Image 1 (cartoon, one colour):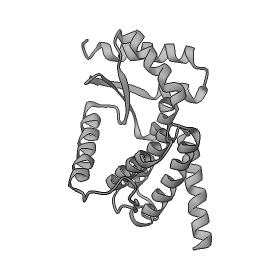
Image 2 (tube, helix red, strand yellow):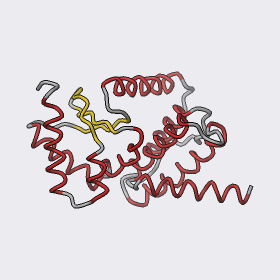
Image 3 (cartoon, one colour):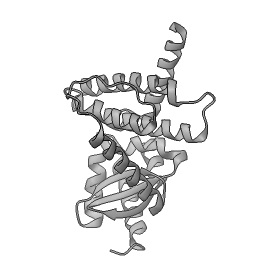
Length: 211
């Protein structure tokens, strides 16, 4: 398959998915996507930073299985969709470089037991790593109650980290990093990112009122 045919095939997927799933938020998320490349049986789909908070409508378990089925039909092969912030190959390469840095920091960090407490990080890459580790440590994380427990603990972790790494007033870079963290929690907990963001604001307001 050549690069020129990728956007056409993905557009076909989008049309089929909009016929299959009757959900306006899901449609709007799909319309913001761009097919970037296929790598190692992963279909890399990008969404620009302004709309990236919509990605959770695609990655929810209730919709992602259908997305994968349609992709297999259109591309005539099974592919795992991976959503990234950005719309170009350069954005995808930057994403891989960032994930590689996180993986490297994990390998060089002191060994911790599976149940070791997770403390707030002083940088955004550390926050992303801690959110992933928290999810891995959450019991029954495939069940609704496990996802709820994860979301609750992840929000406390994120809000505490924001005390150190989120400036007041926030700059554009900080806002994008925060949105990325919220999207990670949303995808793992199968909760819309806007709901996660609302609960984050409520938690921050409660901490200010009791601080």
